[in-house]
Image (cartoon, rainbow, N blue to C red; front, side):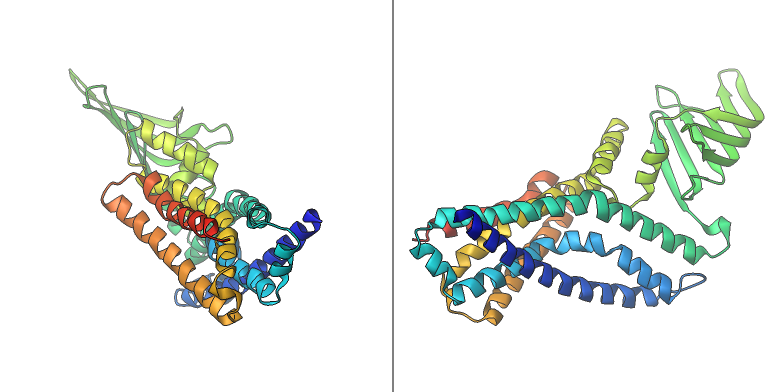
Length: 355
């Protein structure tokens, strides 16, 4: 009996959540396409703008799932309460605690789905979409393709003129320092890249070496260098933090810290992502607390309004705290988890007051 009711509740909540998410994604995709149409150029036209918006939908779905889970759960459970189905469940001997466990199981399923989207689907498609847009906007002009960037490998600083998706960098300038922070040499290569073995290939190089007895200039047609920064790490350095998986974020954060570089932006994204994933499990239980209150006899419109207000408040609080945390150098883990922790505390108190 309990298993049948659990499946029924899960099917109701998941169906409502999927419907809400589909509506939100349709609106988000529309706004995304409209925004992209203002910047069409070269090979990046309307069809490419639509493709860009479509590829970004999984990442947008990950961001919207907490709000969708809350609104969908309010609509689904509210409809059951309005039809007296939850009252019948209680009359059949189903306690609030058992109901909460069933709803929490549904939240766990959504948590797993959210985690899979946020780790394996959303980031790689977002990364591909941004590269596709960059290449299309560049047209046939290869010199414009790629991003200029600086990377550090211990005492070596590299300036890359442009980083393409094939990890060809154009001009490269390397500054090598000694253990005391003194400039040891400056190397300039007319062309550089990373081969399939993660070795750096430098062509037409000219290196100026600073010695105690003078300055020496060394030239070579081609040379190979081995740096800690490989293709994956370099890809992480030029990608937006939202385009990296959690594994990529952890790896890049470790690289930044080992080289004494600022990792707060990536730490904030990592903790923000984990807290948002956890919030998906809390939202259905929060909705359950509401359906035992005044929303039991309310309309679907009132339940929708409550869900939108709470969802927006959670989203705005998360965004505001994440940005202020970086500005004021606050602990990113505490800042990212604070809205979710408050939401969980409120949910626990609300459920404990139900009789």
